[in-house]
Length: 197
Image (tube, rainbow, N blue to C red; front, side, top):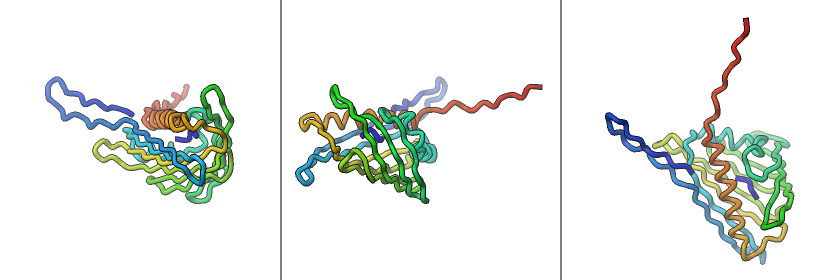
């Protein structure tokens, strides 16, 4: 379930006042529990904005083999096949509920619309239903990118009904904050070794 905030403050120069930089909105998350055929499904919406430009955001979000490096509780993510814009991915992770934890295994299909969206659907695994959509919207005023996430999920294991929405919300907030932090991280410049005489 953990599969996918920043403020930029304007500064004034000592001699000449500059226009303040636009403030990026914080992460917004909503989770609703809906009944579907007598079962509780969770609908998730999350939106955040990063200073990173669209090409960098796209490169990181479609680097499926490296997602375990920054997505909390994801143990591995591996591309099984790629056919044009369709990618089959196997993921292992851990779902934590109160004092319990459960290993999660998913095989999903990602359908990419370059520099625009990624639609993910469940092929098999430890969910009765899982689908999500990542949309990327350039923010011309800042040069950054707005990330919009929408998901529907129905675990195939017990989630307490009274706490379920809160637990899913906490999980999504944690995942999205980690993803946004990775997208906005400034990678250290590569330093080439100086040849020895």
